[in-house]
Length: 458
Image (cartoon, rainbow, N blue to C red):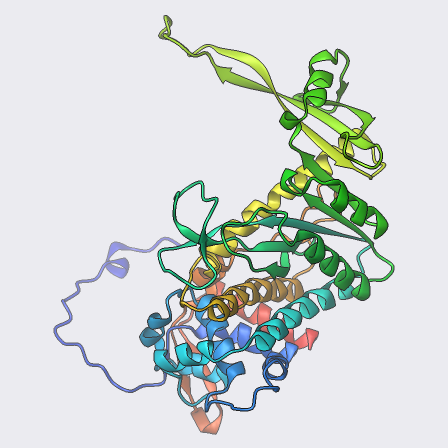
C-alpha cells in the first residue's frame, strides 16, 4: 500500500533530558532462546558436576561463573571488564539463575581458583555433548578434521611462547590443536599448547583419544580423518590404520626429490574436472615401513607475467599448474578422494568464526588454567550455537564427497544482530511473568519458531 508524505514524515525535536532509572529493561531479549536451550540440555546441572570435587564453593558458584563466560561470549563481548556494561540486565541474570551478576573481580578470582581437574572436566563435558549429538544423528560416517590455530597475545601469559605467527612475528602465543566434526561444524576437543611447538606435538595421543570418544558414542559408524602435511609421518599413519580409520593427509612433496621427479616425468593425467587432473602410485619414503597409496593432483592456474608490460588493454597471463600430493588408505575413485580431502578447507572458516564471533583468539588472564577455561567457554558458545540450530531446523544438505556440514548454519554474529540484541521489558500483568518486546513481524516469527521447536525437542 502506498503511503502519503504526510503519513510518513514527521517533525522531531531534540531530546532535552536523559533520565537513568531502575527498570526491568533488557538489551538482550532474544537471549530467551538460549535460556530455553540451557534448560533442555540441563546445562547448569552438568556444569555443576564439573566442579563438585572442589572443597570450597564461592557464593556465585563455579558453574554459574563459567556459564556467565559463555553468555558473555554469546552476546559478543570479549574482555571481562565489559561485564560492567550489562551488570544490571535482568535477562542475563535470569538465564544464569541469579538475582544479580558478579562483578569483574569476582569472575577473575573464580577463574584463577580453578584447578586442572575442573578444566579437564569441562573439556570432557563438551566432548560428551558433541558425541550425544552425533549419536542422535546416527551417522554412517563421522569425519574429523585436525589442525592447529595461533592465538596471539601481547601479555606475558603463563604457557605462551614465541613461535610460528605469520601475521605478527615475534608475538607470544598459544598454539592449540583442534578436532572438529565436519558434519556438524562443532569442536570436539582442544589440545592446549604453547606457541613454539610443531603441529605434530602431542598429536598422536590427542588424535587417538578423539577417535576413541567418537567410537564409544557410535560403535557402528565409520570414522575418517583429514589433516595437513604437518602430520605426515609413518607412525601416525600406522596408528590410524591400526585403529581402522580412513585417512587423507597432505604431503610436503617438495621435501622428496623422488615425488617431484614423478610429477615432472608424468605425461598422462586422469581428468577430474575442467581445471584439475590426477594420477596415483604406491610409494613409500625410505624410512617408512611399507608402501601406501599416494595421489598426485595438479590444478591449472593463471599467473601474471612478470616484467614490464607493453600492452595497455589487458595484462597478459601465462598458464601454469599448482601441485599437491595426498597419502590415503581410502579406496575411493580419484575424483571423490580429491573432493573429500579438499573438504577440509571448511575448517578454516570454522576457525575464523571461532575467533571473530566467539572470542577464541582473546587471552584474558595471565594464568594457564584461566586462559584454558576461557578457550573452553568460547568452544561451548560455538557448539551451543550449532546445537540450537540443529535442534530447531531440519538438515538442508545430504552427505557429500566433501563431507560438507549437513546444516546451512547461521553465524553467531548474525543471530546476535537479528535476535539476541533486542530490547525488552520483563513485566507481570495480572501476576504472570511476561517478556514484552517491540512489535516486529520478522523477529516475532523467528523467535517463536526457535522457542516452539525447543519445546518439541524437550
